[in-house]
Amino acid sequence: MDKKIINTPNAPAPIGPYSQAIQAGNLLFISGQIPIDPATGKVEASDIIGETHQVMHNLKAILSEAKSDFSHVVKTTILLSDMSLFADVNEVYGKYFSGDFPTRETYAVKTLPKNVNIEISMIAIA
Image (tube, rainbow, N blue to C red):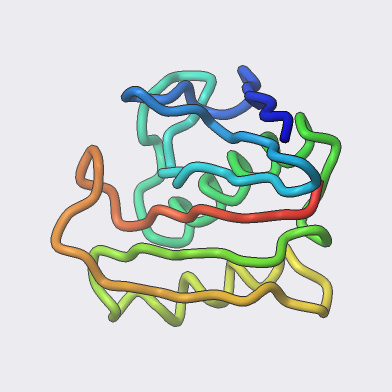
């Protein structure tokens, strides 16, 4: 099976030994994205709503680089710093999909890279 590395300057560069995404056959595996603004390399958002939008913009850029979009996402994993943020995240997240929502799991974790409040990874059909 062929494996293709997906990388775009329109999403944050990896901050470790991993790829933004890998396409394997017709599946696209996107690494967890945090709310880093790719233009500045910094977390610019000041609240969970802004953080969630930035994460979704980063994911959209990676999907686009792979010639895919949110309608092709089949699975997401959301990591939160606190489950009290769930309602706000859910409201923003839902706006990026139009029906036929992907499967999903959400976990609260102790800490996330750069002390952000959210990280989302995805699996999509490429």
